[in-house]
Image (cartoon, rainbow, N blue to C red; front, side):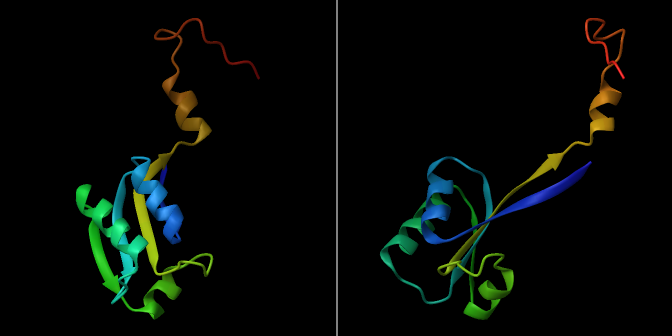
Length: 103
């Protein structure tokens, strides 16, 4: 199995992620940015006890996958991907006799 983090970039996308209840582990904000929506994002982050890091634009540019971070990048909780073999390994004829795998 492998783990991946979800990176969310842009003011509206990050704010919507917080408001939808998505677990955000870290928030990276452009140092010195005091725009209204950025302050709203920081307030939402504090409500959820998210770690807020204030960084320079160069750091955000480096982290950005799209180049459109708008001064904020959120890193959502890692989630686990399962390989098909792992899922099939869980299925056992004694535990789940009604499930038959045909090749």
